[in-house]
Amino acid sequence: MFRPSTSPRTTYRVVTGAAAAVVGAAALAVPTAAQAAPMSSSGILQPVVSPCGVGTVTVNWNSKNIYISGRVTNQCGPGTYVQLFLTFTGDIHNNKLVGTAGPDDSSTISWGSASNNPSYISVTVCEHYNGWHCGYKVPT
Image (cartoon, rainbow, N blue to C red):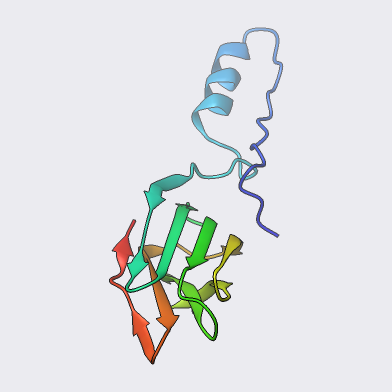
């Protein structure tokens, strides 16, 4: 499972003697396979759908993972629900449902997945209130 809060561990080599400078420079110049690529962040995104749905989320990604966290809120009342979708290219995920809020409720979102070079990332909310309606996609 992908855990964005886990810090990558760096391995250091201790070398003595005449080869120390050469080996030390080579070890520092090339990152090891265990080091994770740095994460990019969207900052806070707030997709909205009228009359009553809103998301407040942050999307983080790198070349191997994508992660979304935040809240989706439904202010429509009985018989309605609001859903938040994450859209990106890179793997098979397109319009991935990542959160749902029931009538007059709010739901916490925490979703992550391995993904090969995710790009064109956006979020949108849709609501079911007298029919199905979606707001505009908000790009990262």
